[in-house]
Image 1 (spheres, rainbow, N blue to C red):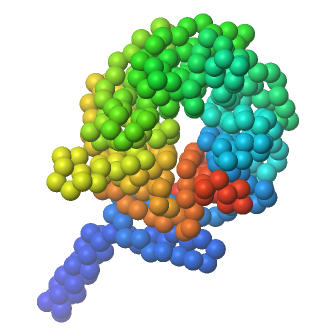
Image 2 (cartoon, rainbow, N blue to C red; image 1 turned 180 degrees about the vertical axis):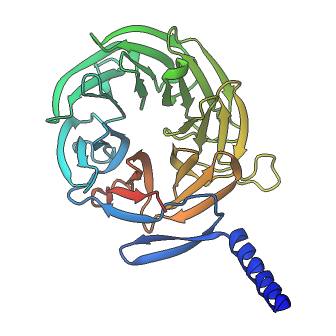
Length: 378
């Protein structure tokens, strides 16, 4: 009997060890379609696409924010249909029903948006043609009733094509999208431009706020695939900065990168619209980079081409150009898993209430411009 029990226990132990060491199978489903994805057991993959929006949709979402209750999509219009009116669209985060919108006008694309809870105001960056140059303008929107408060034009700030802004509730900080980019600082109380300084890098395009450390992180976007790409850490008090070139890992930086604050360190994750694809080259396969904010040290990551990255807890989500979501743990940059978006092509991502919200972009097709809600919990 003892020999028999020992044998049974040995079999059970081997079975359990096999179960523990094997990867999980997680289900990614969309309206009856499903895909089984083998992934390491330590990573949580998006499991269910639970809803999408209906109605007119949008041509291209170029900004996506939340006030903690609602989701707001800022629209960009195709250059082939310049008379179309871009909108800021307000969605119910639970049902994704459209509950309001504000039309910003023809040729007035919504480039970047931020929300300030202190005065319940959305600030959106737009390009304004003053007859001489294309300059920075900031529109203030009341999100409660989706009405315009006012618009301020800054004729001394040449905007370029698409510029980014962030806010700490006291100031707006941003970077222009010009051949010699500028950092700028606008006081919210009176919308006065109080400071600007020349960065000098081409086409500043993305920004993230780190108010705890008193800095803004910024990247630029190249004109071509060989132009240098930089990451800058900008001091909020005087707009001084330090920078590092990230071109070895990123060929064309996206306008949405991710940050993770561990409490003792901040890490930034920048993706690329192009992946290094020449076999045998030293940077072959790289499409992303991790930047350690304290010393600007770099670690390359093998990622698919992307329009946007987002992070929640220790996980980074990469919304790929080919209709997938990649996920990796900041503690293991070598393990990147890929899950299908089931026919959608995401280009923006944010998180609220344990869900991910992703906008679909499909060649400015308004019927395909949908807001997707993704369950991030297993």
